[in-house]
Image (tube, rainbow, N blue to C red):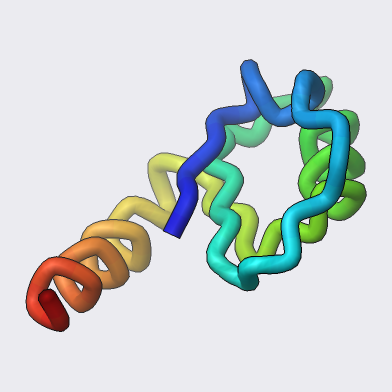
Length: 67
């Protein structure tokens, strides 16, 4: 899993094909660009904080448990 914030997602030049990209956003009115960038880089998920924090925490725990 690679977690990228909306402050950096616009700087990513090429799409990823690993299937584990998560863009974390505190969705505001100007975050439409962040969603467009996340789609462009082939992000598997866009997590809107604070509502998605439980999903993100559970996902990270699953990854840690599988190690």
